[in-house]
Each structure stands twice: as structure tokens, then as C-alpha cells.
Length: 501
Image 1 (cartoon, helix red, strand yellow):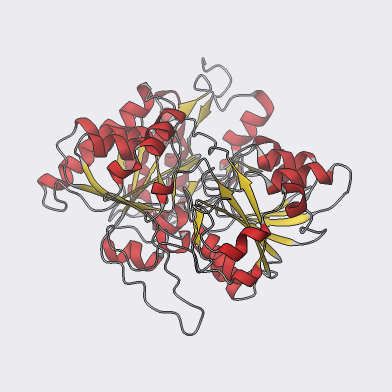
Image 2 (cartoon, rainbow, N blue to C red):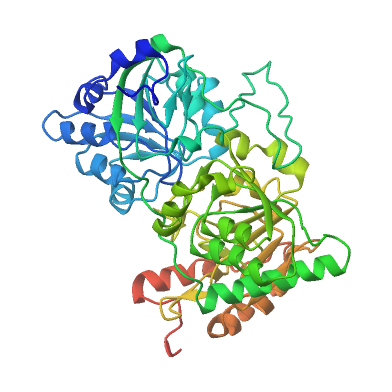
């Protein structure tokens, strides 16, 4: 059985039940699993482990590519099976456990996970669980809809469990480009010169002796929750497209721009969708995730190639792609995340990075992870990989939310993920601030004039004026710097008393 999925005959004898597979995972183990933004993740073994942990208490360190689907993080958190989790998550149940202090969450740049493991800055991997579309004759694994950290997990783990997913079409074979640069001090260069470069192999090399079990599944990826563009996201896209048009007219960019990167979520997806009705053409992408907008741009003839580490799309697009992936075969490639997010490649190709902020301040510092400075939302993900190295580092967010009771432009951010030195352009539904070449006081003037919601502009201007009276290269009124956050915590709004909501 499964001759078309497990081409190496002796490995078919290693097909076991999901519970048998989960039994290999013991208390205090370090487990690495496939999965990047809910795509190509373990869909069986981890859920069986969570069920087992309800009656057999255990705790593991779980390392993934990024977020998992199937509510797996929630199941593990509810069964108290997680001691430590890294490097990214989006689950509200797990988030609660992280913010309560039960689960230790290590939030780091997505390009660095592999290096931390290779350099022994993290404990060694006991076991890897990797989803596959097929196992080749040499025992290597063909991934499904993501590569993430799977290739390195397979290399570094003592044991490997493979989940062969029959719901994944065999036409996925050949989409992947698995390149491994090696370990210090003998790392090689990454010879990628354009998003369409292929420099590796189409499967993940694995020592067949390390494969201790194969589980057969047939479960789709969890769909991305794509929200149609609304008034605010459409305005953000409009401001950004106007900026790009101006860059073209001034000779700094061509109509094909440079390779685009966009973070996950409704704002970034809406911004990319805005290119459909623009004059831009022959666009390319060098990013982490291919979302609905990527394939919409391809169908519209606007995008000619896209490179990423995963495909994370809505249920509608998932069905289309799984039925007709050959339509896009010559237009996409999936890579390991330390390659899709490699600073070396990002800077050399001049990627334009577009990522989402929770909040930013008048000098351009960006918080992309913590609500009111203390509560983890999702994690920094790959935004730092791109922001620090991009040709243009762009952050987008709405100017205000919750009936305008929260301003997303503030005197000082409550947590810094991206310093002012790594931020070029800030965009809200109110407008765009181009910070290139500006000193801190000039940056503040541009941000207040262009990005702030009208309900907060006067107070923010007053803060800046009074700060300037005190002097300093980056003026602040320190005793008021976090007063807006304090006001929100105590009154439920950032607005001063007497200002209508």
C-alpha cells in the first residue's frame, strides 16, 4: 500500500498508528515540527500528544517554523503539555498561557531558529515531526505547502516521524527548493540572484535510519482568515500606491518595482490586492508567505514570480490551488525559512518589505508584538528579518481603532521591535510619512502631519512642542510618554476626558 506516496519500499514497514507515533515523544523532550503560518503542519501526532497529556502529564519544548493550524497550539496549551514554545504563534488559547507565564515563549527572528539550534544556543532536538506529500526512493521527504524549518529539523533531530498526507496532491512535488548553507565557520554563500533562482533540491534529505514511524493522514491545511479590503485598508493601499508611483516618476524605481515582501494578515493582503488595478507590471515577490493576493496578482497578469516558505490562503483559494497547482508551477517556489528570510539575499536583491505594526511613535519606532507593552500578541515573525535589510522598510497600520478609542500613533511605543533606524515609510489610513533622510524632529513633524487620526493630532502636536522646549536630539516629556497607555488601562480610551469618542 501507498506505493505512490512511499517510494522507498522498506519504509512502508514503518507505518504506525498516530498514538504509536506520539508515544515516541516523552516528558521534557525538545520537538521540532513542520508548519509555517498554518501550512504544511503536523495534523495528527501533536494532537494525539495533547490528548495523551490529559491523562499522562508531560511537558515539551515545541519549535516550529511559525504558527500551526488545526487548533494544535490550543490543544497543547489546554492539556498543559507545553513548557516552552518558539518562534511564532497566533493562537488565542496559547497566547493566554504565554501571558499568564505558564508557557515560556521565545520570540525571535524567523531566520535565526536554525542558527540557534546549529550553534547549540538551544537544546538539541530529540524528535522531528514533518508532513510530507511523498517519501522518495532515497528516503528524502517532499514537503507539502510549506518548508519552514523542516529540512534542518530533519537533519538535527535524533528521530524523525513523517506524516504522509494523502489530501495533498502529488503535483506539489517539484515546487520546493531546499538549500542548506551549512554551519559556521564553513557556511556557504546563498547563490540566489532573483526570486526565480533555484539553487537546491526538491526534497528534504533524511537518513532513513532516523525515521522511526510514518503516519498516514488526509487532512487539509487550516484556511487563512482573509478579510475583504475595507475603507481603512483600501486607504492604506491607495497611499502606498501613490508613493510607489511617485518613486517611479522620480526615477528611483521602475514599474516592476523590486521584489515585494508582505507580512500575513488583512492589511498586508489588502495592500497587495491594491496592485491589481494599478499601472505596475512584471512584479515579483521574495517573501515568507504566499497569500490570496499573490495568486490574484498572477491571474491578473501583474505578478510573474513569487518565492516564499509557505502557501497560506483562504479556503476558496486552497481548493483552487490543490486542484490546479500546475497552473502556477512555473511561477512559484517554496524554500526553507532561513533562506526565504535570509538577510544576505534580502539586502542583495533590494526587497521592498511591507509589514504590519501594532503601534508606532512620533520618531518611527515600531511595536509589532506587544499590546500595551506587556501582553504578547503573535510574535515578531519575519518582520525584523526584512525591516533591517530591505531596500525600503514599510510599516502599515490603521491610525485609530475601537471606535477611535485607541490611537496607533503615540508619543512613545510601549515595546520596541523595530527601531527608528530600520523604518523608512509609515502608512496609516490617514496618510504616509516618508522618513528617509530625516532627523528625529523632522520625522516627528512628518508623522504627526500625515499619519495621526484627527482626534489625536492636536494632543500629539502639543506633546511634541512641549518636548522640544525641554531640548534633546529626540525630545520627550518622559513623565507623559506612556500616559496614553495608562489612560487606556484606567478609562478604556486613550482620549482625554471631555474629548468625544
